[in-house]
Image (cartoon, rainbow, N blue to C red):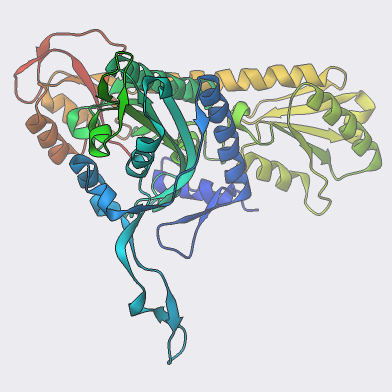
Length: 488
């Protein structure tokens, strides 16, 4: 396996593609804009999925599944929603093929659907049409449903994991009796996403709300978590939406309250996708390949025999694996006898395995094992006795250090500016990062800055105090700073 990849400083985009492909995460498919997620990439997604699923269930949510196909008329019922997705929809018009006399198959013109079907870009419409039958009284609320599914958004410019025509995700859709309960739910899910990003992905995020221009189509409020990648661009890592009563009114979902009065329910939706795998890559990886935070690593430790497997090394490796597994550590023994140790080291480094243990004949004689950590490349020798607890603590240290490193990077690349000239100067830097600046609150200013600089308001930070000032572009009064960045 060739180790060489393009340096980040040389071509960040190619560096990212090199890691995705050479670390065995994904490939382009025969279908333009779609990807094949390879076993290693899917194993990372499974770790993400399983932990998020547990967090959802701990907070009272349950899983269900809804159809992939949505009648076109459903998308017409909520005007803002359909406008937001219309240009990305894949449409099914026929239901049958027939043999072509000239060879192959063609669409049967007699098999035209009475109503076209949309391949799910998101599920609000089909779900709220279903909720109408599920909700009758306040006793049916809250309804806290999540589904794990695939969606299709017909993207023209794609990048593996970050933006593909089809991707995997989860989408939560909840119904509530009051506005306050729905807002509380949307904020709760934003916090769950933030906790997952920081505690499991080791990716620091900023919590905030989107501007009206950047909100989810059909939402009254969109709560977001924003992360900073190593090239100084932002990544929207998860969103949670307060939908008000828009979808309940569009699909006539009412309930009888405790006073036997009829009301429309209040709604939320929220989701994260396989773009989190892209976020993980761009937050931590280096010019030697992928770096995976230990809590999300499918294999946390690999044992490499030096120079090749032997019965003596195998016996020690079996004992170490049993000890590590007893500590809750996932571990594999590299039994391949056709590759040289140096090649194996590069291969496991490229794939991002957090810890490598090397055992040779001399190590057996000395009763020790070589321990190499992926994040810092540091190597130490440890006694064979007590390797389990040592490695478990080492994994926790790697997890913490990755978060600290990413947080220090974000802090070093967050700039406060008060003038438009300084704002544009920061954006011209190699790593522009987040820019904190005043905004006058108007769509016109936001859109002009986006058009002139390609920077967008990522969020209005929730954890920052209000601060009176003036907009850097217009000079109009501003109540607080917002966070700008170029973004994926």
